[in-house]
Length: 520
Image (cartoon, rainbow, N blue to C red; front, side, top):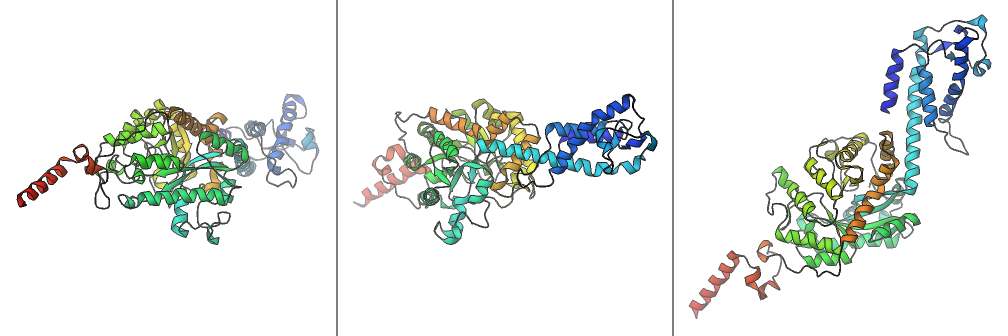
């Protein structure tokens, strides 16, 4: 319930009882004048009451802010000033009274009003916030930072979109389908091109290409719903056309197989953010499990090649995503990047002390760099428990706004990528309820619009402005000794071994050469 209403309610219960028969009131005089002043407020209560009955032409009539205050003022009125309404006596609605039938209602019997009045006020006020949320989202739909529907399409249908069971207008058993996206006012979505860590040093590039392909085929198969775009202007175009702007986010640096050439190729295929790691180290960046002690640090944040990746992303105009990385990697990337970064699906560590979340000192760096934290809805990152609720997600949004500023807040639900979601946020259709909760917590419309879309658009535009395709691309490859060699060739490296082979590799080559000479 709204805090303001709770406080007012507690104040009423301690004050004089306002529920009194009008017959207990003196005829005429100043107090009767006060009664007549209260009549418009009493009539306003019928607005909220009628909201519980649908109108076939106008829908529900909702309690307005003025009516809320009227009901509150009614509860605060004294027993001598407020008459009880007699539905059988029309005069009671006009302020007229008959002095011959005065009697006071006992305090205990009058308490029944509170049992229906305050729930009624809560329902009507909630409807008002929900309606305001919808109004805002009709002009500023949500941009969500991370959705794993493409992974579900792979697991369930092997990316065969023409399978009748994969029809996105009627897809069951997922957090996401077209009707749910429309109900949730989702206007832009970064679809995750995700491949698991066990593909690293194997077929990660192939798998990533296939996931980018299925995202693009979603746009081709449902052109009335999805518009594949690659820049901030494309998002705004999709908003105007009433479509879901669809962008590619590649989740995990292992998808580039430690290659700047692959990074550039993925950019040309539409990738607009790259998560530097998933839940495994790459040869050039450390993941969040380093902070739990489950993995050992290999790069102490970013290696020299990892820094080259960040610089090349800046040059290309690819958003740097720091979800899943270690704190040292967060710090290194925030300090090195020439453009703002995002956490596409992470929450606040101080609210839930899970290592996938963002600690306060990093939130300060987010503020200093104009970066963005898009709050994750996974229960384990929201409440640090198996269960969570919508209000606890709003707590994360509140906290990040408090520490890093309203411009640092966004939504990254992680739908279809997690097994547990908060009550009230069960699928992508529920975004308006979360926005209503922010409005209930007195977020301004400007702050809400920022969290919905404008903060991400600002970051995206800054990344685009920082890019420089005229600058020479990075070419220095990662040292061969830093790569796992079991499933790869070494073309290119063998031409200049002194530049790329590690000392151990050079020694082994020298021993082999000497043995060959001895055998001659």
